[in-house]
Length: 146
Image (cartoon, rainbow, N blue to C red):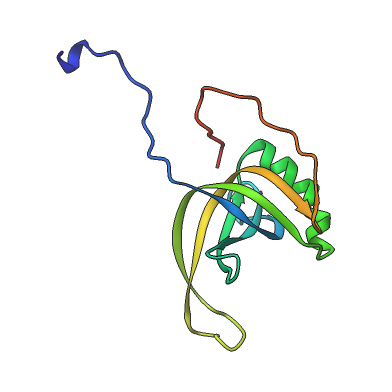
């Protein structure tokens, strides 16, 4: 079959998703100098043995529509320093280099893992489960405006 006879196709994407369980922290609205403001948070993902948990921190832009609603709902709990644990899906992770501006690491390089929080599968506040809306099943892949 020649390329000329093929119908135009939809753009293709390479999806990189991270799924796990972690602590929700630093919920905030980011107001850049240029562009629209957006909701952001930090997820400290748990990994390894339950006897010796290690953490990987993700600095996320909250992109999924339902995820935005849930993070807004959990924002007061995070601000009140309650323990908020979520099941999550983060997409499009990438490292970003920065220089510490204060503290004992001032002037030293650091790395932040950025990503887009697409979905929150469950949430617990101080060990109590929250009743969250479940997304409708869809044949379309999850995509959200960045």
